[in-house]
Amino acid sequence: MLSIGVLISGSGSNLQAIIDKVEQGVLDVEIKVVISNNPQAYGLTRAQQYGIPAVVVEHQKFSERKDFEQELINVLEQKGVQIVVLAGFMRVLTSFFVGHYPNKILNIHPALLPSFPGVAAQKQAVEYGAKLAGCTVHFVDEKMDHGPIIIQAALPVLPSDDAKTLSAKILHWEHRIYPQAISWLAQDRIEIVNRQVVIKDAPSSFVDQNSPVLISPGLEPSFV
Ligand code: GRF
Image (cartoon, rainbow, N blue to C red; front, side):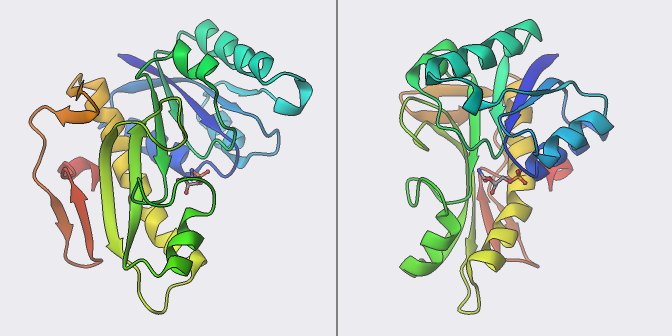
């Protein structure tokens, strides 16, 4: 079974979505550890509730970024983590860390990359006047919010939307596409050719009639 480690900084609702799918028996991974750089992160409590080791590695305690990242690596290695899942982890990881886990780090970003990388992506989308927004699960490379894309969900930005309402709608789909992407990885169904991600037997696009969303490649029924 694939061993994953989840890095968080805050609420950890994406962590919860992953835990839920593991509990439901549709996501075949073991969450070996949850690490937060923020000791107040509610996600730590979520982990503890399920008996998952929850570790705080505070970035402020390290004068060099490399030392902070080395400590993350130490914990991940000690727990036998194979895949690192960034779920609202608010520290930029340098090539030192990324080079340690080539194509073994996943991230979720609340925008349709390559549009709106960086922080406050939902606010940027509203202010820019984008008509479609969404979320992206991608592999992490040396550049921020840049690596090969695994799955995206696109949804409309309504005239009534502000950053808050749009964030909530995007988060709903984050919670579906992230466990799906991890599941494909756990099933060894993902191949990267140049920067194109090929998913073996990928379902066709998923369209939800109730809340307009387009997900390509599609979601499997147990992840909807
Ligand atoms: C999500 O919107 C994620 O895309 C972004 O940070 C937020 C984290 O939310 N990177 P949570 O901590 O998973 O609730």
